Length: 370
Ligand SMILES: Cc1ncc(COP(=O)(O)O)c(C=O)c1O
Image 1: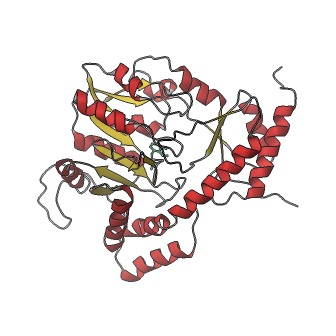
Image 2: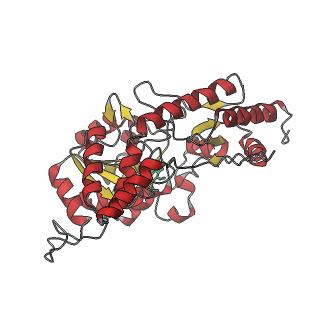
């Protein structure tokens, strides 16, 4: 019997999504309209954010937020070295210099103390990143920002529905961004939401994203802006997906626990520590193992697609010359030993058991490197 390949990423799409998009087409309203209004309202309820705008994706959402913050050109923004490239590229395109810090070896998020240590007279902003489905301690990082007069922009790309001590990720600082890319817990295909605290900042965001004017159809532009708008089709998709979030959360948690139980007791393996202050909606099943390359190969040979963890930002070729040289040993270890297993709705319990038995079998064999 042919085994079906287990993909790393697979959106969960069905009738509700098709019907929502068909309704848009039948209304013949394609730009941000009724579906965007409904999605904005539902996201407001989910996150508690008073000011919500959409962006074409998380990367441009971060860029838009930084443009609106209007931080001094060449000033420094402190960013964890363990994140997707977009956290840093948005900052560079906004004229800022990323200063990279190491992360906690257990939760993989940068701690408030690490941000504090990196602050200099050149710092203008802090960017906590919520990683792998749990929230960083953005509450304390936002307090630090307020105490030191620094902007706080939260990269909550991976954290839709995730709360820290009951408050939604991305709503602690001045502004936060959630991505709805196709690999996220829920998706718009491409898309993001930008959440601002302050009405004046929210207004700047809404002007910049709409060509520097209050509403489309007018030709007087109060300020220079761009087009960061999305379509009603994307919002209809996002809204249908949002209704699935409780089920996605429950199913992913169940699958996470299945993985964790089946891998328990393997001495060469370490899992991410779950912060009791944070909710958890697993984004992947991340694990650390010094024999990660062997595991990756064995799983690939069994048609199970895995993914490595982030290549550390301080080693990214495109950032050389734009950042100062730093040593980030935890980021290096996470890249060297980290492996992500798929956890989406298309992964069956049988897939989880098969994956774990391949991992056990591989680790029980002599290491080829020895
Ligand atoms: C931590 C983090 N930041 C930013 C982004 C960028 O979001 P997008 O892919 O929507 O541009 C991602 C996306 O995968 C991410 O994981």
